[in-house]
Length: 255
Image: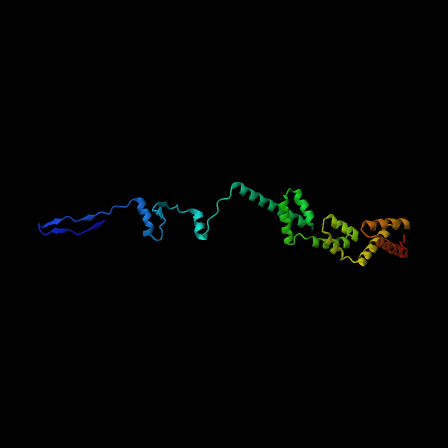
């Protein structure tokens, strides 16, 4: 509203009432529309603008709360909420992966297992095939599951501790479904002379245990014993001959 100072009538000597111009407010729509020109910053409190055809376009309400905060900080729009069924499926998949991981680590902590053996364990626990595949691949990536290393370990253990020959060791590794090339690589470390020496050691010990029997019975039983250990025919016969010779040379005396 604009006010002017009082004026006087020079002719009559009377004072004239001040003229007051009242500012008539613009309609709400017009005020809001033109406020965009008056306010370059685009005050969010205004409700809209005029488009190129002079039509009023309402301004969308500003976002509030957590979604608005994330949008202002990152500059990207927060994705819509995940549907309940999809979220439930993701949760179920994560639970299955966690369960498979725990079962796998528990089994591997007890003993060395091949990929095939661990796969059978997880299948018996009703883990789905895709989760099993992902879990086994992950364990192989971190070297917790290694058929090649397992083959070398088993060859050393079965040969030195249990006295098994190459044939029996190969059969045991095949039972675990270890790949053939890993088996061949591991058995290549077993020297033929070392295997023969181990067979002689076992035959000598067995002959002593059977010393009360006749030579033919001793030979027959030792032959079967070494054959079951996985030694080939040539190695078995050679070991029996050496063991029997030692037995006759030193003998066993009873008082």
